[in-house]
Image 1 (cartoon, rainbow, N blue to C red):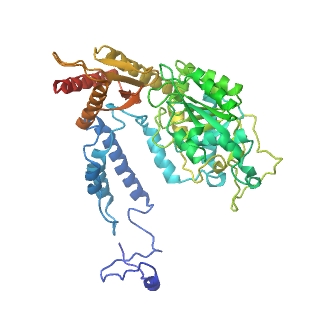
Image 2: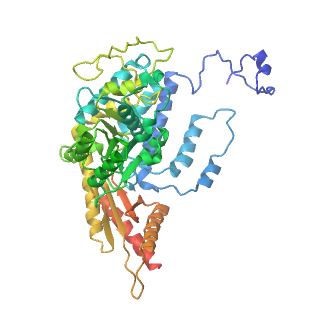
Image 3: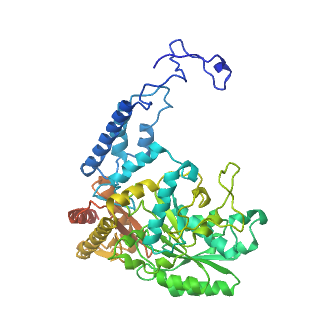
Length: 537
């Protein structure tokens, strides 16, 4: 680094440290010629090095542990260092990724990973992320991201069309399903109270009516709904957790009874939530029946399709979502079964204008024409807000927003719906093969509906000759032991959960590269590990 001018007034700045005699102080006005410059050759060479490293990571997934071996304490110690005073060469930093980061990651893209809803990301989407970062658009306002806004509007239109929502529908991309679910409950409150953000100056504060609102969701509902009632100033008791039936769908009769009891108590049912693919089992509520309940009791109808929404891409399995086109709002997460890298969630709303009014603000530096109360944004006959300048900060919680739509747009154009459908269908078929293989095991019991790409089962070990029967609590621990032993050995990875108060092992198939041989291998690992544990009893 070349030495430059010294700033005479630097000693008057907070935190000033007198430079040593050999300090090299860069000239802030001098054009950089190092790895941080935009020199064409420098950037291209850097790109090649990153691409090589990414390919190396992907190629190495099947030859390494699925779960990193080092403890949190060890990892903290490995990365412990003060803020670097001087920069290191890129090659050194990439080598640290290769030797320290890679070995201690969860191998999400591996065909031996059967964990949560974390997909093996599509390469085009991964590189689209780099392109979005290079452009660094802030898709909060149209003026700062003209094409980015148009692309997000198109992606939203595609999603609304896939789910059968009307031309008046609209939506917004978000960081994930949690923020989308919170947004949906915010919309339900606004509808129940007959208000929106444009009226905020006329409101003295939360009215007493908000304490009377009640929300209904299956006991299998996502934890984000618990967060939502707290963040929105509701009491935890205002969220009714309705029991599930024998295949973990919400019990419709129990829900209606709860609604009627609340009405009799002077409360106001506000929102009915349907689950289209629960995290635990992949169960899909009877959405058409929930839509009827919502209409009957004048409730907002929200569907959490963060996981299972992808089956809408398949003509074979799409009918599982019958009734979702009647929803007032839908949560969808392309970073799950659309094979997008994190993050890419979103919410779709039947009444796009209501979504806008619920989050409408006009900061002083806002440079678009403000509409009067009697004016409405332009509505193109092709769909809500097409042809209009949309500012997405007025459609949700987030202000500054990444161009997450770019990877979805590029991938849809490159992949197409039919290929997506084939991948989803194959994942579902592999999960069903998994269930069939576990049914052949005399000491394993299938738990859950095996509806989508999730297979739940429980090991029910039989005592060795002369031994006593294992208690349910002992069996719970043995199932946990099985999962932990497989995890520690790093050969494959799956999780466990609690179903009907008992521990169940949970396998999720969400990898377009996976084949039946990977399922057969997993069954062999589970069988071998169970036998080892039983011999030690």
